[in-house]
Image 1 (cartoon, each protein chain N blue to C red):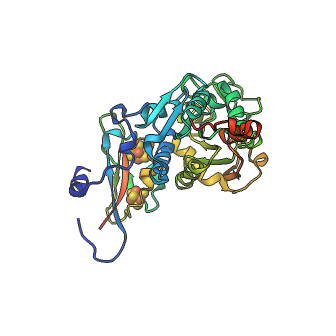
Image 2 (tube, each protein chain N blue to C red):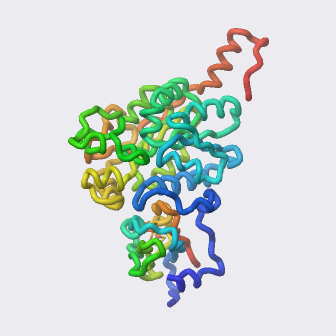
Image 3 (tube, chains in turn cyan, yellow):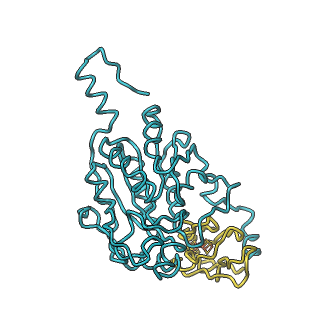
Length: 291
Length: 78
Ligand code: SF4
Ligand code: SF4
């Protein structure tokens, strides 16, 4: 192994992700075969080619395994309290409209503890990108059932299987008014990278759900093998259907997975609406808010 | 290492052995099946990947995109 590395050492380029990482914090805490790291590759590759000024990009996470992303990225980032990355991101964006604000968090954080914030940010069309790594479970706290756990899947709090209806996240985002909604899995790295780039370029509330394996707490408990087995499952059971009706993309336990870009529409974002509204009301007396 | 003269896209990988957690994503999904898990262990006890042969790799960086531990990436070489 060492020999191979030596041979190319003269012109050895650095891993494209390295400059995006707080390398002093590596290795990260994610388990072997966890898909979160894979999504981070896609995110940084998308950022790299997005043309965005990285000094004007900030990443906000909540609590949980995916919540660690903010702490590992060498960008302006903030690790908020549980469920609150969207409120924090809202304040950050409204006070600094020139920033590109990305919320990067897990399904439990964004849709259970922080579910209320999600629906209102989408409804208001706040200009931010929300990336949700959905591993169908609460990972960090011990594998409890989450609002994304498929019916019949076993969690530490549902040892006889889950009977609660889970969220269909793309449908939720769509019906609340998000302007961009996509779903991919950790296997679809190239599609996902492209999709993140599109979402970053979109003005308004964009949402990407990424299904990712949690081998330690979800796959193992449900006898689905390890992270690699889940990735192979994604490869073999995903169907790309751009523009699919989000009502039709709900997930069942180990069912077929519909992935793709489901929604891409334009709608004025919150600050634009606010400025337009007050300009109409007050005319020249109103100075449009620019931060 | 033999050098080929034909115009085939050639590549190689750079592996940070100590970061690898042996998940096998890179090995399984390399489009050229250029990798295998090494017999050797890193200091955490995982088997890092190794190129089966440099001839097989085209530097597409699929492994680099998939690796959840930022332990491998592919590069094109002339
Ligand atoms: S760069 Fe591409 S061809 Fe080479 S090992 Fe990685 S995935 Fe395989
Ligand atoms: S994908 Fe990364 S962590 Fe997994 S075996 Fe390959 S180099 Fe190791």
